[in-house]
Length: 134
Image (spheres, rainbow, N blue to C red):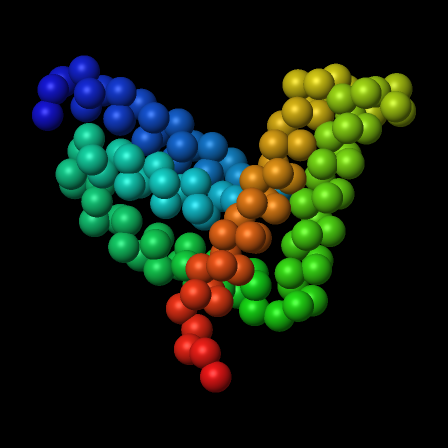
């Protein structure tokens, strides 16, 4: 592999991994971003690939659990919509005393909510595509 390509892949992988680690405690799809970071980083540094399988198993278990019941889906959708609404409130500075007001915070909340809603759709399709039909 060309050294420049290896550096670019390693950089993107590390960024995805760090953002994923942050999102493990913040609202967002942390485990899936950790997995994405490990996959990309594993292409640049093959020794990292050995960590991919256990994280993939756990991420897919979390994916299945997130759409296991209609209630979980409903709460997840509400959480995504709440993140988007909070982003609009923060971005528009509707309440001036909110900390870190502005569109930098608001846009990250809106992005997190949008990603969450997208992952719910993806998870639902993935889980229902693998289920046997009656």
